[in-house]
Length: 321
Image (cartoon, rainbow, N blue to C red; front, top):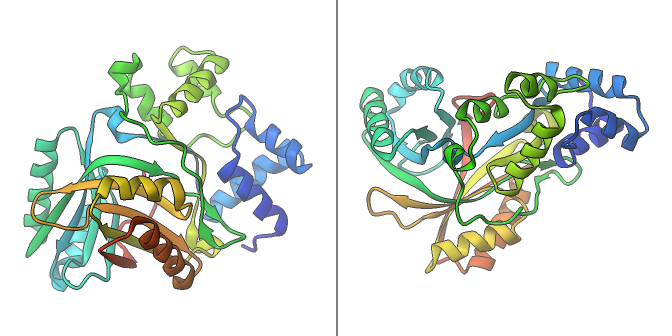
C-alpha cells in the first residue's frame, strides 16, 4: 500500500495528537479538512494493511500491580526455534529480539504479578529453552514510554511527559483492574470509540474520557494514540542502548528529558554483576540516525562505556499489550 502525503499527515495526527474526546476522528477530520467518514475508513485501511498496529493506549504495568524485567539470554542456535514457539504462547512475554551482543543473543521483556513469580517464570523458561546463561535486568524505574515515529524525519521522536515518583495501582486509585485491562486493548475504529467500554463499566462517555485524562496525568496511561508498524513507514532499524555511568538514575533522567529519539527509558537493577543499568530504545530509518542519537545520549550522560545492540530478528512480532 502506497502512503500518500495525506496519509502521512493523518498518521502523524493519530500518533501525536489523537484527541481524548468522544468523537476523536471528527476532531482529526476537521483539522485536516477531511470528512469524519473518510478518516475512519482510511484508518481501517491502514490497519488492514498493517501500517497502523493499533489506536489506543498502554496501561503502565505497575498500575496493574505487576513486576517487569528485561532478560538477556545465551540460547544455543539449535534451541532458538523451540524457544520462539514457547514464547509465542506467553502473553506476558512481549519484546523478544535476537540482538548483536557477543554473548547474549536473545533479549526479551517479561512481566508477572510479583518478583518471586517473575523469577520463577524466567527460571523455568530459561531451563526449557536450554539457555547456557542469562541476566535478569529488573525494571527499577520507568522514566519514559512513548513509541512515536516521526515519519518525516525518519526517527523515533517524542518529548518526555514528566517523570513520576510513583505509579499508583488500580486499588490505590479506586478503579477495577478489569477496567485497566480493557483500556489497554485497541480502541474500536468508529465514530464513538469510547462508548462500548463506558457502557460496560457503568460510565458516561464524558466521565470515562475525564478518567482517561486523569490517568494520563498520573502516568497510569502512557503512549496514547496510534502505534505504527515501523517497517511499513520506513523505520527499519531499532537498537537498544545500555549505558554505564557513575550515576545511572541521573543519566536515565537526562536521556528521558533531553533525548527525544528515545522511546523507552528504564533504570534497571540486575540479579548478578552487570555495569549497564541505564537503558533506552532507539528506532530509525537507518543505522546512521540511530548512531547519531546514541552519540547524543553518550555525550549528555558522560558514559564510561556503552553497548548499542541492534535487532537482528523479531521473535514475537505484533501488538504488545
